[in-house]
Length: 473
Image 1: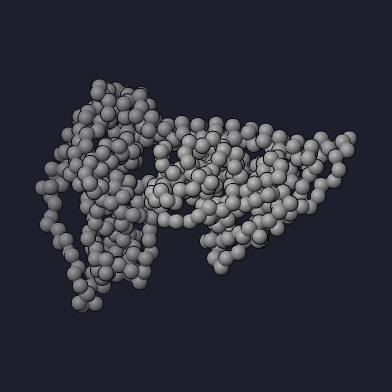
Image 2: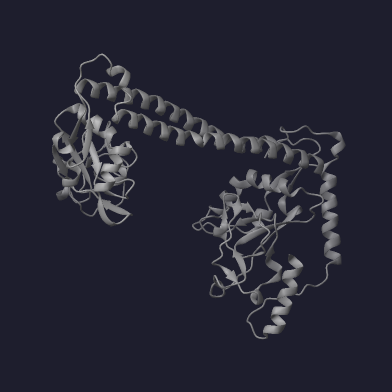
């Protein structure tokens, strides 16, 4: 929060404009898919919204009327792994508030903009999480959140800030939506390059006027000299570090670039065999994975650690060095993927296997040497361009991810919209809210907080619950 506030702002605590209402401890045994009203748990607060789980519903006669959630309510998780996450409930469906779910209730909706509160919680998110994660177990009380300080602005300025933030965040969403298309476009581009490469279209113009000979159908077996498989043994699921020896996992070769962190650390020194150590330039391929990922291959770049191949990751040796790169590209093309997937075996799609015999039997559309060299060079160059675009995309995406917080900082420092003398003073607004609180306390009638324990009289209970449900719709 800014040290010096605009002159018509005032610093105050959240409790002076709202209360954070705790939820009700519904019994787990009473929640089921056969119930009538969904119950919102802390796990339902996701991505600044609220998801409804139809498997956790309470019978109408067991509903506590004081804990209905209304459309537009802002909820916050107050314990567990999602502590500090908040979201707006935007559905018309009537739901109930479970324990450890907080519901922000303004003292006056006329004197405080509810969407301003939503943006304010974004700004306070870091402080809320610091309070929640200070102990061994993530947990936060409503009193701690209510005690957080914030800069209160006049109501008219709140509305201008909200309008400006809505506009800026809508623009950001459009930019993000456009950016999200880039990885898909790059993936399609790479696949088109590979398709043109393995069908000869990529070098069609280059080939004209050259006496190169015809393309051939070959088996992988004719291109390689040896397949080396490692051993499988139990290791701690800890990535290898310098001075240790690692055992490669199939995830290390899954995403086209060798990932040396996707390893396990070998503790038993008797299991270490330097003949299995992976070297820079090695062609590695997974023999087991899901149907979409089995047979993924990489050519290893620079290495920092000593890592051994495993029984699920082979090292393949080639007769010609150039065939290593050509086959690596070929197997990633649609033709190559078809060859691998059609030859993989297994009863479950979640884990398929490729035998050495089946791998050696893969058909390869194979060009003459000079054309093969030209193809590999063209693919390298085109992929380098795609990689450069990908890197620029990642940098831009990271910068855009920081923009919301930067914009919010400006908003709550008084730098996003102008302050107008006609707005009045936030101190007067705070006094009005305080006066309304006092009046509400004086005139409030004793309420009957009915905690329905058990279904005894179906006619009476259902009748009362139906009246409550009708009242809150």
